[in-house]
Amino acid sequence: MSRTEVKQQASVPQVCPSLELLNAAVIFLSTSEEVRFYNVAACKLFDHAELLAPPVPLRECLTAQSDEYQMLAHCVREQRILRDTIVTWERNGQLLYLLLDSFPFLSESGDYLGLFITMKDLGDFGVLDQHLQRAEKLATIGKVAAGIAHEIRNPLTTVKGFLQILESRQEASGREDEHSLTEMMLSEIQKVDELVQELLLLARPHHLDMEFFCMSDLIEELRGHVVSEADRMGIESHFEIEDKLFLQADRQMILRLLHHLIKNALEAMDAGGKLTVLVKNQSPWCEMYISDTGPGIPYYQIDKIFDAFYTTKEKGTGLGLPICQRIVADHGGDIRVSSKGFGSTFCVRLPLAKEEIIPSA
Image (cartoon, rainbow, N blue to C red; front, side, top):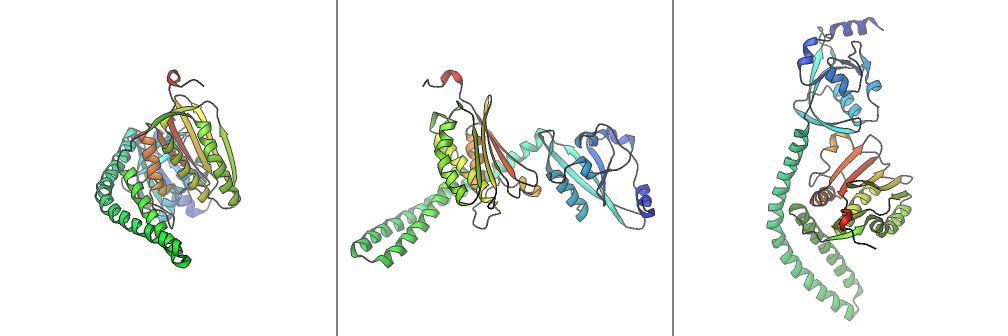
């Protein structure tokens, strides 16, 4: 160890017993990406059994591909000062919401040595806050959508009707060049109409046409098209579906949900990727996992992907995932995403139909 490193370590405050009274994890992350733990809460957060006075390499605490590692490494490299920032943190398969603050620490000569970071577990408050924020956004979108739907659809219907009349006349007179232009206009009008429908679906509760069905039958309905599309893109597809998993749900809405998630997974990969669709019984839930081997979702986007109009796609509307979340919520389930720097997995949980009301074969 060089004299400079020894001097820097000596200049960083040692463990303070009084920090055990603080209801938050406290660490120091050096510019060389070594962690010093300042209380037991910090050790628990990083899954360390005891309070360690010597600094520990961050790579020994977290895998380099994890969102948690990438976030902390980015903060210390960029000297980011954060205040009351809510971040997600996975520990032993449990997703936590932490309130994070960071404070740069300088040596006596003014050299940047690293960051002091405090992380407070928000418990259910973090989830509640996110749900409230999304509910407020949906309410705003609902007002806008309800106001514009009528104004847009009326002229669209009129224009579409005249174009269809024009199209039939062009067909009768054999004007193929003009007929192709009319078809193009009708196609663009259809896209606008679909966008309005998605806005309305996202903004207000949808009437659910509930019915009993088996998930394996539903997946088989999608499977042929998915495999064909995956083959065309040079992507391997794998399905693993448990038998006799029955739902009481809106079949078309669940189809739409799966279509969105599978389409997103395929679009996230290049040739050589692998799509995995897993459906299993985790009573009282039916759990569906849609996984890809794409580049993954950066940690700073995880909390935004379910926000309406947020998209990283050049031609995306940012409505697909919010609609998925709305469909799942309307059915009393939940949807989560996991991404560790390589690949992403969306997990959807929907309540299984009660055995006593499942129709006999």
